[in-house]
Image (cartoon, rainbow, N blue to C red; front, top):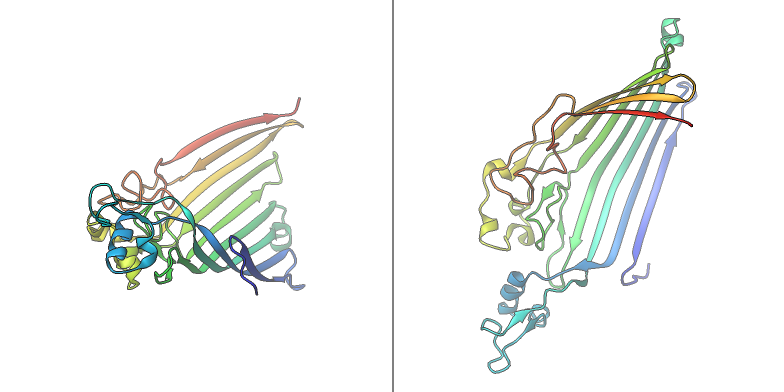
Length: 281
């Protein structure tokens, strides 16, 4: 396959199973591999300085040298850290989607309504990045980074995430209740990786990491909701997010996070109750 600069190459394959012995059951699994060539990256001045001193021509070319001495470490010299299309990235994984409608009349011989179950999961097998020429390729799966520097970035890249939703359509009063389980897998600080790109902090401050911030545990959050019809054209909705009012995991320092935590993994607002009303005019 020909590589096109600034282009995306993707490979996907899927399988759908709907067995006759289990009506209303659907199982979908999809494999994906997406390669992006020439994504936008930038050269951190600290890294450019170190790599240039080590003799890497690419990084030296990013410096505007002193016009008299030609040095890069004196007043008047500076690094060109403007973003450009340096990078390559490969995302690979498997998506799962399963749904089933449970008919209470068939099981209990009594109409208690229909129960719909839906499971959506993602298994990330590769989040491989090559941000700069001459640097090793690194895989961010299972890590979170320094944030804004030349590594995995601040967003956690968990190997496994899923949601499980259950909806019960009650056969009386036009009522439907639902519950949702949101799960994100554990991650660890990318500076603990054996890959030299990830294990070498961009600055001395980034090298300081506590055990509490080095390993971020998995997150499970539960939501509840209900909808009831009022008349023919109106409905009332109630939603409770993070119903258990689970506190976010606190990090000692702010490596890659905000508010001393990772808001992309944990709920920083606590329990949230929303009431809505809709009607047709």
